[in-house]
Image (cartoon, rainbow, N blue to C red; front, side):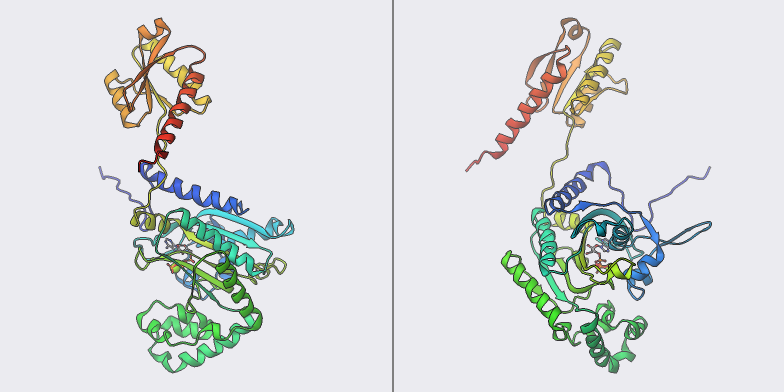
Length: 439
Ligand code: ATP
Ligand code: MG
């Protein structure tokens, strides 16, 4: 008979339980920071009307032209898996009337994104983004606030060697002048440039700066820079942002070459780059998109946000040897010998769990020895072994699995409460010990 040998799709990953603690660390970190900054969580569909992405991300971008997965089912045409989170979040903001609900609206999400890319370390076809969006403010303080949130997370993650690059890509008015200057600059070299750049030249010259081809990026090196073309409003905005960042002690570099891969940006764009994960170094990217809400049918409303790649964040943390929060393990394993003891173990387990204790007992029918081995394997902090003698005496020995120390514990109605109190005392003593300054 033929063997079924199905593997996961290229560019996707399984997170096995032994690795999950890294995700829990990172997700806990991003959520707690977003909440501390007053952002509220939102969840949106995995797929959306394809037109949403074409309109917002932009039809000349790589993301839409080359990387987007369209999905269809009989009678259901025109959907795509989300390649990023902003478009769907803004659609939801408009559709649910959140935009009328007191501004600024500050939203965050952790979600999967899909892009048909060439998979490599830190570049997947299904990846995860933590993202935030703030709608209803054109003030540069909002830009500084959003950047400050990303920075706090990267700092709290323990990362070093992360550089913040900022730029302003202006508003539609000053960008038009700049695009003209770009066309003039690239015109004489156009013959040498790639096919995609020919259409970029026509439709969206800013994208010429974003081309990954060696020849095109070499030519782009001498291109005029946007910061020389900003109108007064955009220049003042950019200068104020820099003042706020400086006041908050956030170091940055101005990089006039950053245009970002998505079309909806206006004014501020920024990236946090790690020098430790090679060419996939952009851990976080974002910016302002003052025209997007109106473009998608909402009332005019300036907004901004960022997306942070969680695989890249974890990869950078691993490469830098940062410690993740420890995995939670079993608090108590209740072993048993014989049917009557097995009943007692099940009953006590249930009571313990009601009290929030991580309790486990034998559900396989193993020997005592094998049960104790399992207790070790799941790194149980405590164990008890119940048998005829213990049931008769109404008391058992609670074993500290780390030290081997044993204490009597009554097998009565207070078992869960007594154990819980001991567990808390044990955890507190552990903390005290961890905090002891040895030097
Ligand atoms: P890159 O230049 O590396 O392709 P991008 O400009 O396409 O990045 P954005 O669209 O701004 O990236 O997405 C925000 C963040 O999502 C990126 O900074 C990165 O951390 C992450 N990201 C983007 N594409 C991928 C991917 N294919 N696999 C893993 N993470 C990704
Ligand atoms: Mg990309």
